[in-house]
Amino acid sequence: MSSHTRNRRRGRGQTDPLGQSASLHLGPDPYHHGHPAPPNRLFSQQSALLLIVGMGMGYIATISFGTNTTNTDLNTLVENLERRKKYESASPLNILQSSRENTATAMMLRKSDHRRIEDSPDEAGTALEREVSDGLAEETARSKDELQPMMSETGAEAVDNAEAEIEARARSKDKSQPMMSKSTGAEAVDFAEAETRFIETQKLLATQSIPTATNPIVMKTASLPDSKRKKILVTGGAGFVGSHLVDTLMMEGHEVIALDNFFTGQRKNVDHWMNHPRFSLVVHDVTEPIMLEVDEIYHLACPASPPHYQYNPVKTIKTSTMGTINMLGLAKRVKAKILLTSTSEIYGDPEVHPQPESYWGNVNTIGPRSCYDEGKRVAETMMYSYKSQNNVDVRVARIFNTFGPRMHPNDGRVVSNFIIQSLQNKPMTIYGDGSQTRSFQFVSDLVNGLHSLMNGKYDLPVNLGNPDEYTVKHFAEYIKEITQSDSEISFLPATKDDPTQRKPDISTAKRELKWEPKVTVKEGLQQTIAYFSQVLKESGEIIPTGQEASRPKPKVADES
Image 1 (cartoon, rainbow, N blue to C red):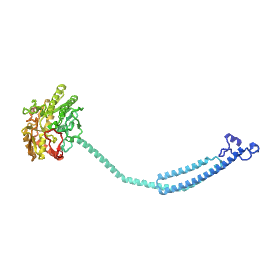
Image 2 (cartoon, helix red, strand yellow):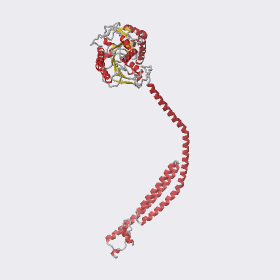
Image 3 (cartoon, rainbow, N blue to C red):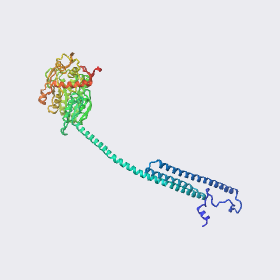
Image 4 (cartoon, one colour):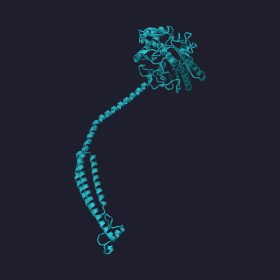
């Protein structure tokens, strides 16, 4: 097959950079039979010649520049490798990475030049391509020959250094292993000891109270089976009597919920139980309903000293009435037994002496003390109304004057006022001529009586008090003697509706509860005086409250 036919089948002959046929020449046009070509055809041939010459010169310049760039890049590569050999650490990883980078660079340069040359279509370009390729191969081989010893030497050093490094690390590991093992073991032992101590502490907290400034004595708690352990609610549980009752119930092993709004109660009275798993403190006002699941309710919540309950007489009535209704409603719903702490004040200024439970009293229904007196009388009425109508199991205790540690230092009662005044060598104030009589029982005796009443079968009102009777003047002299005070006794006008005599008839308690006071007044006073001495050290000088209505807040000298 002729060359002309092959070129025709391919669509064109060998092409120059402009895509013209390779058989194009500048002589006479054979298709015009020796005659000169037309001017436009002659002009086209001359223009094509000029373009071919110009592009050829540009191509040669481009190839020359590319070759010089290649040589420069190879020289730079060699210099970089030499610097790396000198300055880089002889790590096998670094040497291997450098070798890979250098090889990749050389291959990229070669491919780049080869690609640029392949883009040239003419024979001259092909020749230059071969020349450049041969030169690049030569240069690459020469660079490879120069780099090979260097890389081999670097690799050998890297291997040696790597082996030395591995050995050094192994020796370091062998030396540090005992230390690390010892350290890790010590930490494990410390953690195990801490965990053991924590568990032991939790077990200890579940068996006793924590000593505090208010209650430094450690109280042990019994461990009861679930079938015998009760859930017991004590309203006013952070108060004077309530906190002591909480102590007794906790030591028996029961689960106790102390509910208080802290009007007269104090958190410090129950702080020693705060970490015990079976004790809960709920800040709540009994005049608002509350939903709990309990087995027994001791309803003590209400201010009990004249200055405190007279400060807000409406709230005092609401506490005695609405508070009692709420607790009775709770007892009815959960079928719990409920005990109300009533008061000897329901007897008013008695005309019967001593006062039995059958005495109906002599009360001024509109006097300054009536908010407390009548409130408790109504509360007793509601207790027995719920008993008869809803079959609620009720108990009522009529409490006479009680004293002991955790009394509020500023409650205005006879015992607290006399002790605070005598310890500070201040005048001991008596309202009236001091001939009025009182009976005083220690708080632990009262708590025992409440506990016996709740757990007994007798459900009528019971007097709880100490039959030992003192005139107020004699009692003040007795406290002055015990405290060895230099205080003088001063007499102030008597307060309105103050009872002239007060002494309980406890024959019912003896008969039904087998209960009577155990602690003598002298023993109780010694403990109470010690408590108030500590309170004075903590609070400083205290000015006792008089008979006027007052909030339950201690008055120190700088506040007066």
